[in-house]
Each structure stands twice: as C-alpha cells, then as structure tokens.
Length: 138
Image (tube, rainbow, N blue to C red; front, side, top):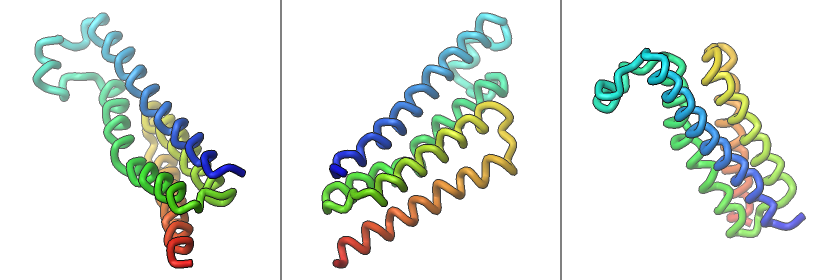
C-alpha cells in the first residue's frame, strides 16, 4: 500500500466539513425564508437561530477541534514513512466515527449515542499517536 493512501481519509474528513457548511447554509436559508429569524438580529447574535441551525453550527466548530489533531497525525505518519496499512485503517476508522458523530449531532443530538462516537475517534487518534511515536523511536 502506498503511503499516500493516508490522504484519502484526510480528504473524506475535509469533505465532511464542507458538507456541514452546505447543510448550515440550507438550514439558515430555510429559517430566514420561514420567518423564524430576523437577518439583522442573526447577523449580531447567533442565539436567535433555531435549534436545527445551532446544531450544525456547533458541529462545524467541532470539525476544527479534534479533527485538527487527525490532520497533523496523518501528515506526521506520511512524513516519517509510517502511513502503512494500520495507519490507513485507523485513519478511516476515525473518519467513520466523525461522520457518525456529525450525523447524530445535527439530527437527534442524543448524547448517549454521540459521546461514544466522539470517544471512539479520540481513542483512534491515541492509537495513531502511538503508531507515530513507535515509528519515530524505531
């Protein structure tokens, strides 16, 4: 397997973030069109948006938290020539957990389901860190 395969899950994670921006735009447009929110107020205060908009907005903020560590680890693994099958598998596992987390976050936002998905991603990142350190120390 080519070490560049580590970038497929990176691109999939970037795609998720972009999709969330599209969903946010669609939900905001729907809220404005339905008269649920005043544009002038919304420009100054995010609290005036309906819950379905806030969920997506919060999810987008999440995409710039733990996934940033994912991006860094993928580039580290690639740069130290450690982006083998295990690393790529872990990267895909992280991305799948983030897609599932995002889906729950922007729909039901049911914490007993969302938290284990988040924790799965966090533990996968820890495993990716171990792979990175192991290869650097070798």
